[in-house]
Image (cartoon, rainbow, N blue to C red):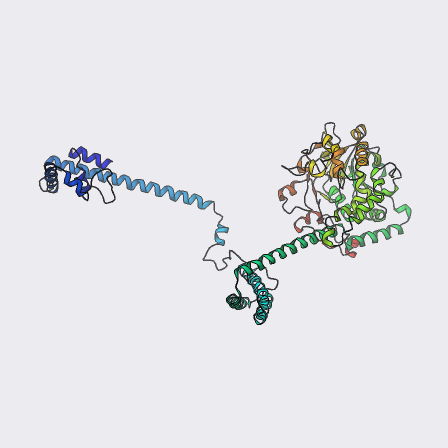
Length: 593
């Protein structure tokens, strides 16, 4: 438009024909005007207009030879304008280039040079983007070989089937247990080539699209069934492993028990028994039948306590482990702290006439439910029922948490700890938390849609639907501060008994102590800061490491307990750091790190 305007200013009225010839490039197109090619339109022009156009064109062609001073000045002005315009365009291009370069530099700063170097073609150790591509190729060849073996037998081509079978065995030997290309045998490339030739031969003789599709679909369905069966067996075996006592722990308990009962009675007593009912001290309740796990809880608590002499541990176990638990802490006293071990079977008040769960556990129906569980005949069929036969659900140690004021009538507050936790910080701050008239201080576990009441309770039952909110937030057992004064005022044990009696046929919840705990302490639980108690180390491989390191207590809830072989390796050091592996009993039972 600037060019057109300048021509109009300098030359007067614009002639499009002459302007097209002299000024416009070939890429310009004039819309709505007649072209030279339109012969019909040219013929329609008047003779006078054609003559004028010719005269004007002739004048334009010879204007350079007879320019007036005015036209010369205008031409110089036009050239000067073009130079200025060109300079502006060059300058604009330079500015754009500089901006692009700066942007590229800024982007390059955000690129990780280590990752960038990983893909450098100049590096000898340049990594393959698919380190198992050859392995997958061999597996694909083997799948097709099986398809063709089946088809060759259907079509009675025995010789071809035998050749394919032999080549399949060769490929299987070359593949072995390899999961990456670097693990493959050196003969793998030769086997791939030979198998490729064999498959080409089979394809020529046997390929039938419909038959191959049917065979592959059948193989897929068979593989899917095998995967499902293996998953069930894996679940069964992992649950079985989680409930089994390792040989080392059994050995430790037996050795300690024998040595305890060899001690004279006067040497079986713990010091500082006067602290057991002192309400001014920090009291812990720990119910466990695992000597090693209990020792880690006590050791980690004391090692991180600011005033160990003010801490009192009330440990309750069963009659099988009573001697072992006593012997361990007699040999390994917790410094200046106080400890006392009791046998749950000696609590005479805890009987079936008072405790509903004891009465239920002794019933024939409950024994049928826990021990037979619909009589599964296979590992896979029994996997879903094994969780109902977990020994902890049959042990009063697991239900004793609902009787804390009866066990410790002289205490005002007590901190309940599970035996699969590790303490990493001083816990005395929990006694200073204002529970605002509530009974239970616990860390909530609900997310956006999980670990809420509807996960644990049967809301199709009218008693549950009427009394509880399905979206109410769940909380965790494992580290709970209980106000025993408020407990007695609100008759928490009585509330528990009411719900336990109503669950005689397991219509409210199926198993465990968390569901009745959620019901019993509904509206009576004060939420604690999440950093007090971090859960998931027994089942979740993606717990944030920073949350673990900053937590006061970490909890190995789940099947992968730290004392089992199936524990997650990356979480075990938090637990093993509190075990003395040079201890004679630990070494004699081969409980090595």
